[in-house]
Image 1 (cartoon, rainbow, N blue to C red):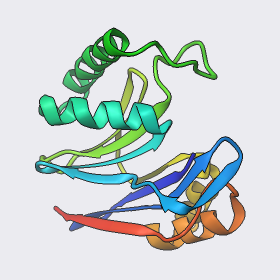
Image 2 (tube, rainbow, N blue to C red; image 1 turned 45 degrees about the horizontal axis):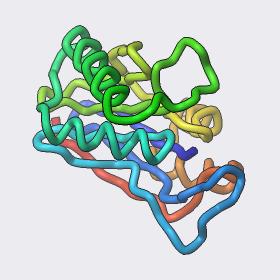
Image 3 (cartoon, rainbow, N blue to C red; image 1 turned 180 degrees about the vertical axis):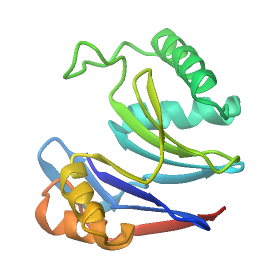
Image 4 (cartoon, rainbow, N blue to C red; image 1 turned 90 degrees about the vertical axis):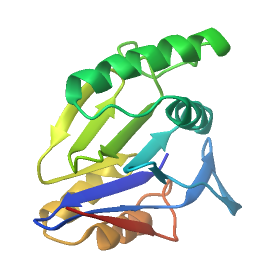
Length: 171
């Protein structure tokens, strides 16, 4: 897993992520896997199984991301149906989640959404996702910026690693 942190300011939205690729409990030190993507006018930070991430990114490239909570839920429902049609359903740790991915989307309307399975919620201040989310959320709650929150997480969570990738979206 990984970590993606997001904080919303008055004039910008900041996202940061780690870059580590992990295979089970093993760090893959010669490989990095991006977690932040710019797709059209949207920025997406994704954590989860690499195969699911790649499938979602391919789906997004085929169909534009919606800009509202309800439409994003319907969009994700179509994604899971499409995914199940082209690949065997991946095993999940939770029987309630249709997916092994969680993502943060900064819409082209400068709204931030968290999506986990078909659960979609609008983010108002800050959020962190991934295996290092608890550490990153604590750092964000203490007032540090997203880069520092991810650096702190990488220092204490073995499933997260440097370098930090950072992007900002003006509001």
